[in-house]
Length: 474
Image (cartoon, rainbow, N blue to C red; front, side, top):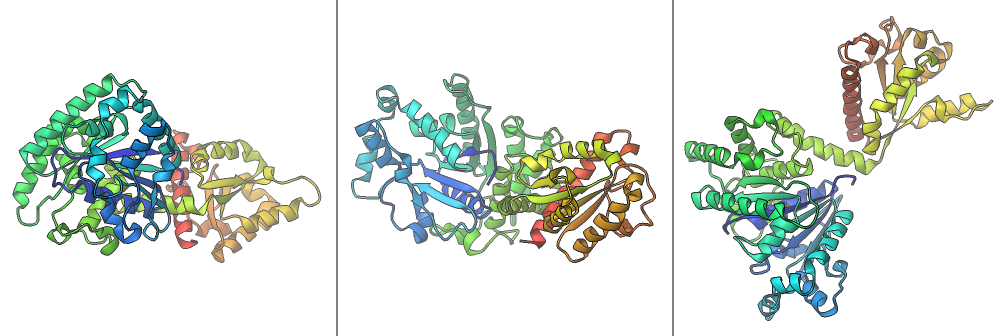
């Protein structure tokens, strides 16, 4: 899937907040949406991530401890040799693990033999880890890291060197809240002097094991408390409209992980066992969190306005990219060539995302076979854009050949036809009057005071048709 790769560390100051539980379920959802996902269990002192996937992978044979031990012995190692592939759970994407290690009787002895300061000072492990980091990002869409709790050497690796995003999980009590504030201040100081180039570390605090069904008022008080005291952690990526305490509390309420006693027994994956439709269950909450991470924390104002549309947009996006680009044919009068070229410019964002490829008469070879080749193109395209103007309607070839065949394909459900009103014309009495035209307000593009806004309306309308067509033509 085409997306900006991201390393996301799941961290908690205290244990018992459901950190590994949250990571495992989030990973499954991302993989089911078509992403390539790698999970790394860096909680070496209390490993357990592999247990959530035991029905699919059994007991791990090797993992991070063996990988780093091999590096120390040979000064080189291929991390790919230590992967565990999770089959049968991910549907469309890819889900792999680097487990903590083989759970043998001598595991803790082998784990304690890893002296982290020596690894960095003697073995130059920081540079090696940086190389691994780049390779992981080149191979996967999302790398989810399960970090050790508290303040440790391992925690520093997971929260300072590796991540692009830090998910901070905490239950609603003062020790968790104070711990997050202290740890994040330390992380920021260390990142300021970090020797490798990094973009700003984005932080996403998430309240877990949260009870609101019985203690609603107390729950709202704690959401207010988290919003007020942790607002500086959200502000680098939070939309300005959401910076107010009340709006931030709404966001926290959307991404909170509820307390559901049923899932507190054993290592379970509710997104697999029960799904994500129950608003009161954790699967629904994990789906919201996964969508926010998949959107790279963007568009969260839409999350507040329409959560289902926000999640659905990511699911449709993955469907679109799995299908490959739709073929879009542009029908236009030669007098509107400049407007056709401008349309192509505004469609470039959809083309760069791999959602469309455009064809028009410029794609055709000139000569006696021109008409036959054009007819063949129309039979193979998915969307047909008609640039409507007086010249367009006046063209005998367009009106008598291209337009009738385009409407036949539309009626047969083989293609979608979209009239785009580029210049004023009497088009309401033509055969295309029955179709939804763009811009949506029916005003031709050249009649807009701000034509960039008009083109934006057009592209958004085309994007919606692309999504609808991809869903109805899987």
